[in-house]
Image (tube, rainbow, N blue to C red; front, side, top):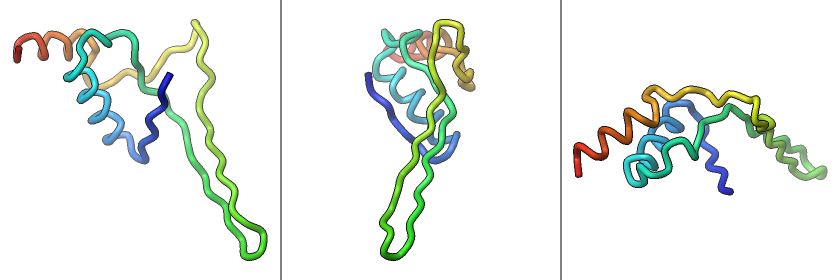
Length: 80
């Protein structure tokens, strides 16, 4: 498994589309999920990083991308 963390939704969409453009066979195997990364720092106390990611279960529904994996796969096949 690999986690790619981006700081804005639009960057997430670009990565998702780029991955499916390069690997259309991954359609249905990758998904977008909302999460957050928080950094807290204080002098003489150090820095802590908190990453929150949603739990993934068979019943969970990933965030839908602007285009479906099928749409992206069709576009990649048309370009080939």
